[in-house]
Amino acid sequence: MAHRAVRCKSDGVYIGRVDAEVSSTLEAVNFGYYFFHQHWGQGYATEAVAGATQHLMAQGVHRLVATVTKGNTASARVLQKAGYEFNRLLVGNDMIRGIAVDDEEYVKLAS
Image (cartoon, rainbow, N blue to C red):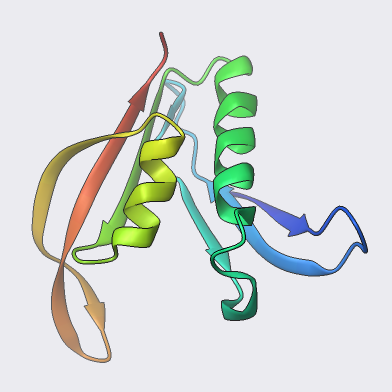
């Protein structure tokens, strides 16, 4: 799994990360991102996800898969802006504070 720090261009402050697990068949089977709360809603995630997606595709990755917790509309919008499309609902796919939650799976295919 490759992790990349995301830093603010203006001052270099660490604001989050993007990561991807790329398989031997050049699929990013677990593309993800995380940003610190104080940096939400400022477009950083949208810019970083789009950039990381473009970089991976330029390296030959032909399919990227990401999941977000059902109801996390902000994260779903970030993926949609980067060209990911809703693929399916994964019932009970994750645990948050000991409670099973559903995830929405989003997929981006190389054009």
